[in-house]
Length: 311
Image (cartoon, rainbow, N blue to C red; front, side, top):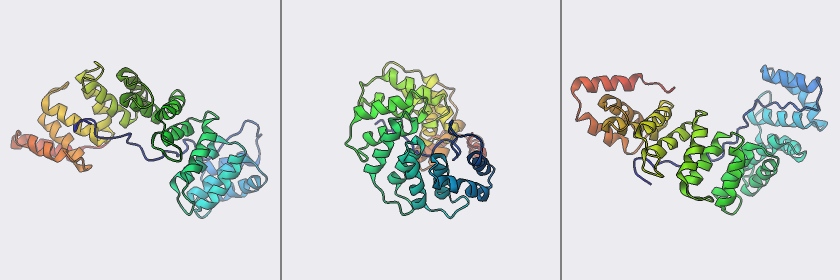
């Protein structure tokens, strides 16, 4: 990897399996009644009422109530936090085929928190069940499992297959992962144009790591995509969100006037911000640029650092 550009990997947590919904599930076959009232109480923060309404339904086998109760135990909302109890209720809903619950159960096994025994084999098993139903979160997670041999044998082609299924549903993390697969030639032919296409889809959703990768694609002469103005634009978007590698690269572009007007104060600011996040090369670059600045310029740059806030 190039020292100034290809520093970071996917830049997402080991498993990003937080379900992107409030921990209430509305099933089309359930009419208004205790379930709906319990879920409404949950959304309003009235956990005592939610528990009173949802627990009886969960015990009766209502999968949505089981899932909600599992979430309450996982988060400690209205009940003492208890990951084992959460796993019990997620398992009940998962056994009925609920993809959300299967993904949550896979997450608990992957992370092994709160007394739940870590089992990558079990996590992969439950991710597959949800992935086979078309659930994008689980498809990405199963792809990740194949990429990094987590509970399954490493298989980049299988990983790319699941990333694609998830990415085509608009799941930004999978779009980034599929872009990286094309960038590295893992499970798919190496293809700069395809990599940039998937980075762009995730970047357009505001994902800093994808914006950084898209900046990379434009910054280097890779697949004849080089466009330093576009590189600076996408680095800036990621840097504005606090992405340290993008901040470092943007600092270099300001220092050299690559694709953007040369500005030592801006270069100093971005190098300083990257250094504050322990970027290993940023302090050297910051100190080097400082030697080219007047005292007034340095004072201005240091003020910019103090006043900067992530967008």
